[in-house]
Amino acid sequence: MRTPLSALPLFLCVALCAPYTTAAAEPSARGIGVIVLDAGHGGTDPGAHYAGVYEKDITLKVVLQLGKLIEQEMPGVKVVYTRKTDKALGATKYDDLQARADIANKAGGDLFLSVHVNASHMAAAKGTETLVMGESTKEQRYNEDALYENNRDDLIDMSDERTAAIVRAYIQNLQFTYGEYSLALANCIQKNYVAGGRSSRGVKPQLLRVLYATDMPGALTEIGFLSNPKEAAYLKSEKGINEIVQTLFKSVKEYSARLSQLRGEIAGNGASATERPAQETNPERTVCPETETAPSVSPAPGPQPQKRQPAVAEKNQPVRYAVQIRTSITEEPLDSELFKSYRNATKQILGTDRYRYKYCVGDFDTYAAAREKLGEVRREFPDAFIVRYQGSRIVKQ
Image (tube, rainbow, N blue to C red):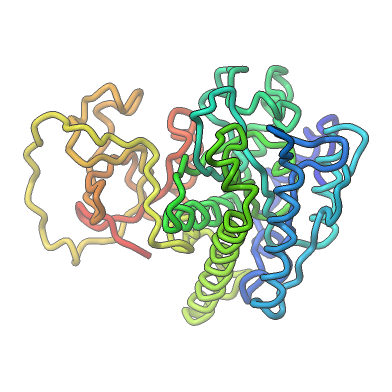
């Protein structure tokens, strides 16, 4: 159970100063052993509701069908539900969210997946998105006009400086435990939404209380907009529910299978899970290797290409690590204002996907060293992540 905010300074002091061990942070060595499924809202809290359709009902249908499918198709994986009926879990929103986290933590979950339905005052808003624990640019600016005005109680209030400092310290520490596993799961989900023909709004950081309070990798997925008539019809249809369930099931199965494979690779290299930090495998980039995250995309034609020095026997050069802040179809000048405070301190590395030009900061021998830089970079580029490169080219794990 997450320690209450009033006790967090002591908790974080212990957490941040204690020697790092991976046993508590790593998912099961065989993939996931326990998954906790959370149907958003319930009871007197209907969530988004339009034309007699309630978010709480849709999320419950999705979660119950998803859990049943996991139990049938993934033998050995235990499914825990935060609710299986139409009920709230607490008298207040805060109590309800904490109760959900308590269920997950008590179950010893390896993975937490919360299902929600989105809403907006703009009927044209559409698409899916998956949220991980973190602070968005809007939240950093205390922007109360965020898209989730219907669910403000779901978010952590960062207007108090003391609370903000505590939460930001936790977020930074999250990168040393299971933050990247959460991002890997979110990437899998969004990739499979797109493969199924859904519109994607991407993977985003958000200050969500329920993710903050769960001690395991986790994500919250918004399966569509109930405020959009076309999406609402899809969400309440049997076809729509079935397709969403299949997408989420495929994502969980991919995540679990790839995680198990990575654990086997580590063991095969002679290192046990407690001897070698799981993050050295960089799950964010390897659990769903087909996913190309694009923190900042420049699809429009850019300036004239820069002259590049020819690569020199790149395969013979050492593998290095950097923090990627931007990707583009065309080349960008390294003194561009797009790079903010890293203007003239950014280097270009080549990838193999459509967004070939990757813009990165830093040059590190190890993943752990790059991870120290990552916290700083994410203050300006919240979606930044670590990449491996050799010479002038990105290399996969």
